[in-house]
Image (cartoon, rainbow, N blue to C red; front, side, top):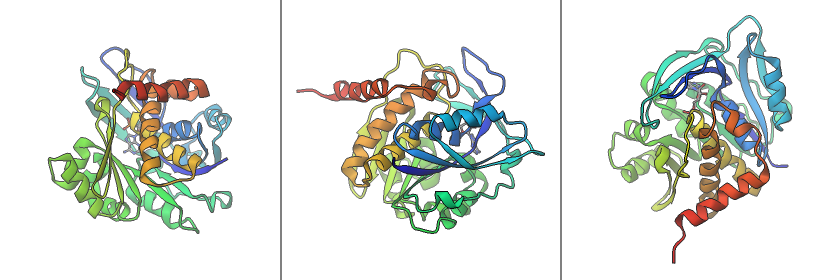
Length: 303
Ligand code: AMP
């Protein structure tokens, strides 16, 4: 089976939507990426949790097909905690709390068994840690996909730009693309970000879909219109996991394959939105995934 290396937060999240409020539940960018990419590849997780993190949950990741040797447990420390609140339109979110805890001094370990893996997903995490992962891989991967967020633009823009210069694909949402590039037009922002290094830029627009840019080419994948959106947390991470997992499975990195990967990514992200936390992405059947991917064809095909 195709392999991926996934680095990202494994976290406790507390989520507030107009309809529901959770206590601490399991989340984290790395968690969502691992679940999503595990449907297409064998993700090799690189992460750190505190002694308060339930062991059963690591076993759950393992049961989903994730290699967990690279997950460090710091028994005297606390797991990363993030809390967010959705506004009434469910498309905008406010971060209420970010407690880095164990992530503050995260020194990623790449076990020997992870070396040689050719598809790498750098989930939303400090750009310094993302770069350390790249530097600790002995062989240059075929494809490095990176996700990031405004938090890192606000506090370490120079470090972020250094990491961006080392990756092949960046996924970023529209507001963040504008912030990073200083441009309002999305295609102009994408061009500016490509000038920073990545050959491919994916700009996510939440419920309005995602755009893939490469040189002067543009491809658009809509988001699946959902009858019920319960919790969009992790949709962006799920998207990145589905995208890179699919490319690893196909072992292709050309623009045509990336178009299909964008649809796969959108399909996977839609599952995450339908349930609270990771519940929507934890246990899908191949049939459910195939059906959702096919639904994208009928959504946009016309004669
Ligand atoms: P998304 O909805 O795709 O933006 O991802 C939300 C997930 O990202 C949550 O599960 C959080 O735990 C995680 N997250 C939020 N902020 C950070 C951060 N600064 N560093 C690492 N992970 C984060």
